[in-house]
Image 1: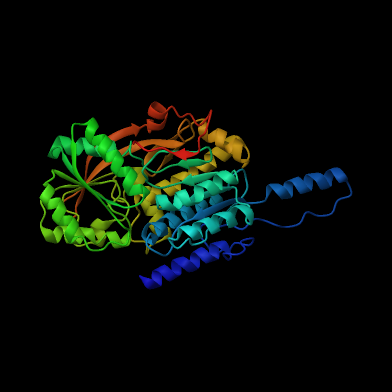
Image 2: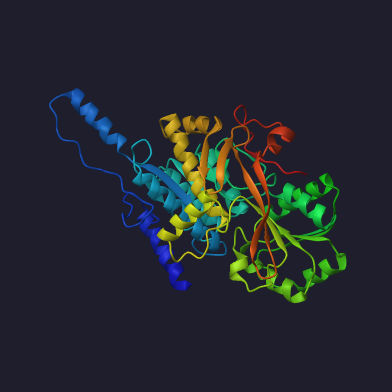
Amino acid sequence: MKKRMMNLIMAAVMVCGSLSGCSSPAPSSPGTTAASTTAAPAADSTETEGKEEEKEENKEPVKVGMLEDLSGDFSLCGTYKTHAMELAIQEINASGGILGRPVELIAPDCQSDNQRYQEMARKLILEDNVDVIMGAFSSASREAIRPIMDENKTLYFYNNQYEGGVADHYTFCTGAVPEHQVMPLIEYMIENYGPRIYTIAADYNFGQITAQWVQKAAETYGGEVVGKEFLPLSTSQFSASIDKIQKADPDVLVVLLTGVTQSSFYGQWAAAGMDVPIATTINIAQGYEHLRFDPPACADMYVTAQFIEELDTPEAQDFVQRFHELYPDEPYVGMEAAAQYTGMMLYKEAVEKAGTTETEAVIAALESGISYDGPQGKVTIDGATHHVIQDIWIIYSDDSHKISFKKKYDQIVPDWLSSEKGIDLRKEAPNVQYTPE
């Protein structure tokens, strides 16, 4: 594992050239193509010179900045998200680039450190002059850099499942949000197991706000939250929490724990012999715990997601095959890989519709309702909210960690911001994050 991580970090460094200057990306990276910089020949005519300069300018690469974690607590997902972006860019360049221009990826390792996220965001914008920035895993990382995007009027794609509510002119979110995940999941669990719900969550904005959505869903579908607990990301021992859950006697346990350290909960939960089904919006689909942990750690677990590696559709399996052909040592293709890949493809569609990489023109193209048929099926930008319309599955892991698909929800529209908050980002952007409370 250490050897593979070192290889990945070296690959990221090669993509960038270096973290301090990225004017000459390494051609050996599968996701990066260097721009052509051959000088135009001398000409007698000023008009000819102008045309040659314009032609040369059009060969400049489309610069994509990516901020992900190849090391630290979130590197598990940051690694396959990085690979998904490299795959997308390799395929785009192989088919002629964007507007006939090659795509150059500049991708420093943010090391699961929010201060470094901010430093690298400023570098990508002010030194590397990127056309768009994609990335971040945790919501804390996203919120650390989103004001920097706004300040510098930089287009930003957050290609990750999250707690929802961001209403920002420059930010587009392609991952699943509570309308996709929490609402259908809680409705399904109440109908099949009962109304009493206990929530255990990571103590930062993702866990706290998603827990608010669990409360909202419980109230909507006739449930009751009988207990909730928020734990620091550094927590690795859960005996006291398991004791609280046992005393509360819920029908359903909602788990919103994140990162490598908190994932130790599942083994401890299984060892305690608790007979309570788990509902989650992240596990299995994001961190492939059903493969990393021995059964029955993920027994009787339900998750809502737009994609997992086991999804048996032609589009999904074709994506998984292409991914593993390029990265045979990558252990799993999670839902955030699909979101990252799709985010890059949506950007390509928007730039080509706009005919330029100019930020406001691309935003207008995105807001017009750009669609892409990707690994998880059709995905369409909802112009009013800057989130995506997409299919969602309820996925189940049994006591042997065998995966099955219980229910599909077609083309869920994430319209909470527009329907309940009156947001239409095509008209006015508050550039804030709303919560259900």
